[in-house]
Image (cartoon, rainbow over all chains, first blue to last red; front, side):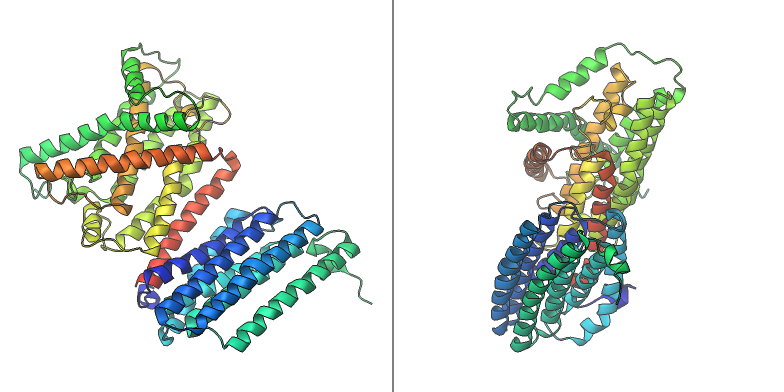
Length: 224
Length: 322
């Protein structure tokens, strides 16, 4: 196992920010209150910005500075503000409802991390970026957000899981290939923004139809 | 013999005795210091650093009242607990990187000693069959069942640098140069703080100063003890707290621990160590003043978090630090 895991050492700062991002994914899994979940999402945005900056500095890739700026604008400021307003207007204050209890989710998350580190090891060997060791971390964060979408009941938590997945994808792209082309990055950022607006409208529709955000109601929707 | 390979018999014994005396003497003082800082932070007037010593002396003078129906186990556990901690004091290097007992100073041995102490304490608590002792013993084991594997994972994470779980060789591998900023060690240190709070019955898990029946864990186990036996148990717990702090210093802030037992280095290293303990004690008091006690059913979440962090640190070492 050890041999397939080993990848070249990453610069400590880049490595630390990457590990902090992974921890923030776990924090999202363990949060019980909806508002703290949005705060952790904003924190993850800050970590993503800092980690993009640190990769930009370590690799000397100037275009990554713009990516960091977009991340800051979209994921730290715009999306959390939108989400907070949404929570306020929908009067969502309660606790997150889980299908699996939190300690179990954590243990499952640990297996997800082992799996993604093992899976990413060969990819890391092929990449030639300064932070290639972090591809596994990105993959793990992606799968953890996915796990969050699977194990949470309410629609809002699913959207946060989705946004977390987008963060993780962005992070993986930066560490594997120094980011996608700027056009793609901008496109994805706007997609996510529009997506959040659509979800917001969708939430109101869900509430009007079912008077609840629990997604289990959608299983037996009449189909005509 | 393999023991005391680098020391001659009498010197080895002298250093061992010095180490043990240091821990025995300092442990109540550290307790007093934590209590003082807590009192100041909470706007109470502190009882002074010497208060735990005064309590111990008073307890040793008191008569011993034995509960009805106790078995020999009940009498045997306090001396056993106390001596386990005193032996553990010889295994944790803090005055020099290789103490006389270096060949047996293995981190796994140390964890084994601590769990033997915990097991015997829980058994003694259950010995009388009183509901509180029973409850305390069970709760203690509930906290331990995840902090113990977490402790082991932390040990494995720090031992990845030296390739050995022997504490002196871990220390030597760290003292080769200034320790850079390693993600795996930082995460292991976070896990260690959580484990430390859980293992020593500190605030988010257990309130060390409560005797409120339904919330206590550690105190519930000592409820039937009195006089000298209680003093031994309490002194042992104070030693455990100090030993955990010393272990944390060894793993995460080892700067300044002298390599040899020369007199000048010993003084300098000792002062530095006292300074570190001073700061850590104040930080512990701060943590205890900031957080409320967790509901008992949230404790497994806390310990699961400690285990999660320690394992993540271990895994990240391979991915990031090769």
